[in-house]
Image (cartoon, rainbow over all chains, first blue to last red; front, side):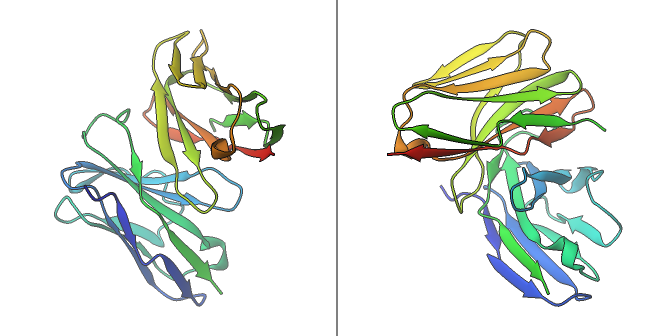
Length: 116
Length: 110
């Protein structure tokens, strides 16, 4: 079956602009995660959804970042007033079980965000 | 805050030599997962360790979880060119926070 997909694969924007990054998890996966990965670093946890609700958003760096998952499937990560420091690869992952953070996470290919 | 440290940051080995990467947490972990990320790719799940002192093997890969559940290692026997990539550990703490290490980048010399 299809894996996790993310769009766009690349996004170049100007400082101060608003961007939306989309994640389509594996069909039937209840849990969805967003991470941010900078060059030479490991993925940095941002937010975790169980179904439609954000079970843990403690990794969001500030209030410019927001994520939704209105129907418990597709998720959108929204970044307002982008800053150059937001440039990174944004990774989405999904897992089958909700409420079990130890379940295998399947990562998407990521969206490379560049803020000029 | 809690940190998960990985060493070494880089490792160059001759093809056929063994390779080991180590992961250390400042606090006790509920479990630890290992991922491999090929250049230009995304992390791919390898394995999860849960029990104190657990050892798991996948062909040439051996994974260990320390007795205190604060450290882990990944050992590759007789490396091959297909082993190239960055290996990440990801620890889950008692608050269900998942923290990735910075990874160990493995280069294979032919």
